Image 1: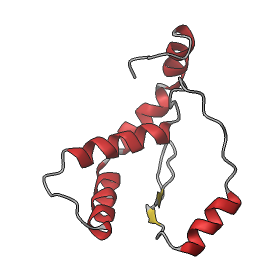
Image 2: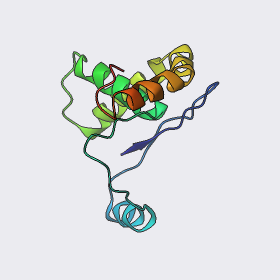
Image 3: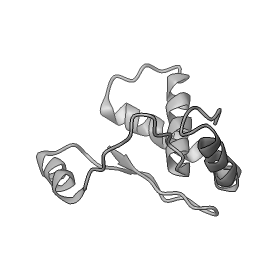
Length: 110
């Protein structure tokens, strides 16, 4: 599991959280899960960043066989995203929300 945060002008360092029984228990005790509607789009800018990272990992030439290698690849992808791209996600949030409303929560093209 990894954790990261973004803002218009900066981002946090990416933190890898090992999957230990204690960590799993802490997450299960401290995180309230919300029901997620079936057609709910991910409009949050951080979700868009995770999508960018996922697409970069899919294009990665090296097959990921271990957690340390995957963690390193995710860190490289996180660091490679230009801050201007993150700003663009914030700058376009109103347009993405408008498109979501116009399409009754369906596909928006974003």
